Image (tube, rainbow, N blue to C red):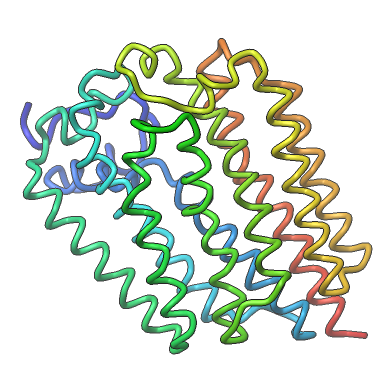
Length: 313
């Protein structure tokens, strides 16, 4: 297969990568999942929540907009780097799974050496974003996340809870926004982080149900395989726990009815996901997983509205 051929089986059909990007760029953009921005959104949202929560605590009408922009750039770069690294580690497994065998590495669209160079370039962008925060404490917090990112691809080989490690990594932004604003970490940020971890475990369990049968064949583990038909019950526990942790964080910063209303609508969205879930329908699992972007934006809207209100009183 040439470098300009081959769409990825689980990619969005008709994306800008397929229709507008230069042909020679497409394998690299697919490697970074640029045709599937949902991952960048899910990495970014805890950063923005944390920045908004810090604004509430500081009685500021808006989060630091420069930080919000930097987090957006960093989320795209580091999500792409994480996907590239994950594909390098998993390229043999991906070649055995129907949904992933057409990814650039197992399909031969890029070589491992090319993928490693691309990985380095994305990490450099992430490092520049971190430096631009101009906060040594935030630099340390950001660098600390790399250890979790490094071990994540191996977790599916040794534990049925790889989603929990993904939660640790994808929720890191819940610490970063607060750290960048205050140069320290306080209990509200830790509570936000804990809630986000539970949220990630929930939505990634839904996502993992797409590969449940292939994973069992090739011998990798997931909470989807662990929970099976008990998935709705377990989602209720994880999503419910996430809402409680978020409520506690809001209480500590003095959140009013505005923030609580946003959290309530967020909770209703999560309940809707559980009610709609059919673990035997991979397409539905994908749609419900993707809907978490909207759930996260709902929570963000409540936090932003609370910050604006707080600054007026």
